[in-house]
Each structure stands twice: as C-alpha cells, then as structure tokens.
Length: 209
Image 1 (cartoon, rainbow, N blue to C red):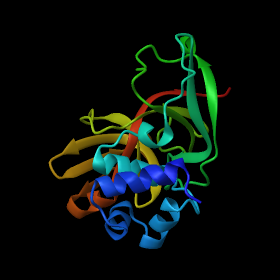
Image 2: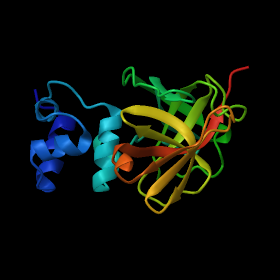
Image 3: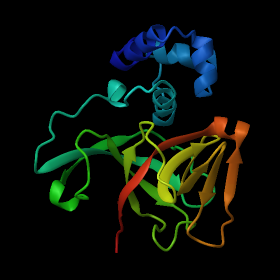
Image 4: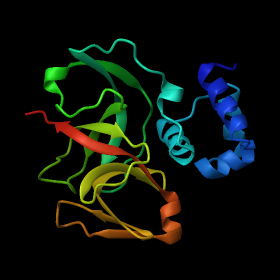
C-alpha cells in the first residue's frame, strides 16, 4: 500500500524523468525493488536513500521530514541502533531501526548547525584507534555535496559496506587512511569511485567508560 515515503520516491523519480530501471541501476538494486518501494511493499534502506539524495542533490529531509520539536535547548537526533560503521572490515547494515534522542545542546559540539541533518551510529573495529575506538558513538553531519576537507574523518559506503576513515581527494582518486598504522592506505580510482558514496562527516563522538 502506497505511503508518504513511497509517494515521495515515485514523485521525485518522475520529476527527474527516470524510469524504474534507470533509477535501479543508479542506486544499485533491481527494478523489482524500486517497484516494491514505490508501492509501499517495503521501504528503502537508509544507505539507498542516501545514494539517491547524493546523486540528485535532494536533501535527505525530503524523505525523512524535519523534526518540529527542535528548540534552543534540545536537539532531536536520530540514533540508528543497528547500523554500524566499520573501523576495520566493512560494516553491514543490520536494520534501520531508529529512535529520536533528545540531546541537550550544551552536550553537543558548539559548531553544530541547525540547518543540517545529523544522525548517530556506533562503530566496530580498531582501524581508527586511538582517536575512535570500538563501540564509540559517532555524530554524523549528513553530506550534501560540499567539498571534502582533506584528512578529515568521514562515514562512507563502498560496495554496499559502511566505513569510517580519513579521506583526501585528488583528481580522479580518493585516498582512504586509517589512524591505526596496522591498516594499509587504500586509493580508489576511476571506475572504482562509482561504488563509493559519502554519507557524512564525523562531527563528534562519545565513548562509554
């Protein structure tokens, strides 16, 4: 049964003058999956919506909506309890279960922008140690196409797996670096970049002691 999300997806696809087959190829699914999304049979995963938004410069809020409960003292940020960013081998999306956390603004980084979208996810692995450790919570500022800040930490997807690493960009290549020197540097070039999508910049993190 068609719902608000499926309606928005279908409407935006038609607005962009794309067939279901064309959109499926861009996102990395088959045409049947797009049909199921548009008919409300199931919902797209967060990473697939992000690929759509990144490719067509559509704000994520078009699909997720804006939270009207934001105040000067509190921000509500989505926490994806079953989505992990890998600090080692690729992290797979387990589900899209999320909850909206009411976080006092005094506990958030002072440079946080209210016109940006943010999410919180958890890390796995040790490739970004000692700065980011296994189990840390990452505050992600959603990527909207701005220029990459070299050597900053980003959350990204490569070949359907999620990673958190330092990125630097040269012409036709992306340099991926871990803080843990036991992990080798990776350079993606040319056609390899077709499977690379930035989700957001790591804006801050928290650790349980």
